[in-house]
Length: 384
Image (cartoon, rainbow, N blue to C red; front, top):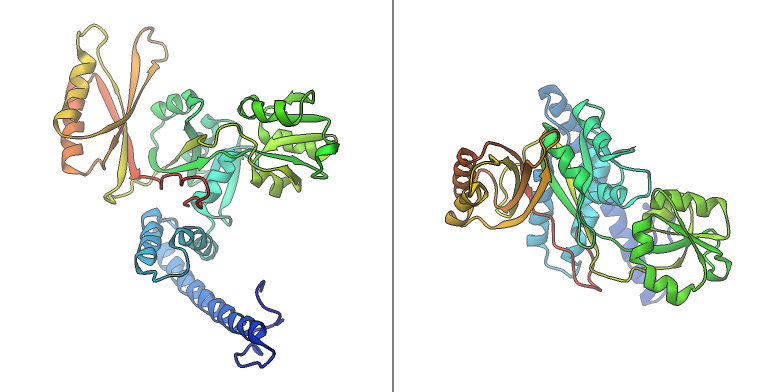
């Protein structure tokens, strides 16, 4: 218990005359014990639910249910506990109690300590069974072959643009896109000692090195820069060599036992990566959803792309992104990935998708899912 001084719950009580501070601390101790009792009560109920789910063959993870819990609590919250923190707190409470049913297996683009690992923890909580994979294709394959329940892959970055390997892999997979995570990419400088004076080389993946170039030139001029396959590889190098500092995430510092030399050294504070959650679930509509689909059109048909997209405008479906990728083995033919607001079960979205499908050569709805919370402005806590 971080707030109080009692070693146990049985003796915690209100009414001490040791002064106002001690009285308030004892009150907090009593409340902490009450919270612990309720958490264990919740855990016992979840264990019963787990037995029922196992008998029915129902999946352990229910993202819609978890979202509903947080939304209901936020709506009922009278304060002063900040509603923005409820997602963080209950994500871990739910993750911990869900582990009593069975750990959710989550494949992600590794290695451990990467931003994809961070995004996976944000979505599923710290007690999920996280499984790093070497490529986006291997993440998807792990879910397809039953080695993981879900996969988390990066699909777009506000600075670097779309992740083409992710689109190519999704086009060939039979999995559904069933969630998204938005993660502001903040780079920290990490080393064994945490002292700037010990830094002789700075290591990281080429993208973070580029995204921190101005800071490095201003604060560490002349220091050698070393490219590594990932930020996690840079963190491991820093752990081995006291003269190396890694540009990596705060999670990498936790995973590899490094100290922070400097926080948030990225040159742009609007650098955000969008991750997709892939799996076999197909979430229902929430009222604030996105849908992704992929189409092909005949290359010899004039105006084919215009006709494909026209139904979305006519039915008032806002398209949030259109990406074009070449088709494998078919020169000068393309896949068109379309993201739109709304759920595939919404009437206007369903009508637009149906008409577009009739005008396309081939099509597939990749999935509909709840829109991730928008990234907060600087200084505000990030949503979970």
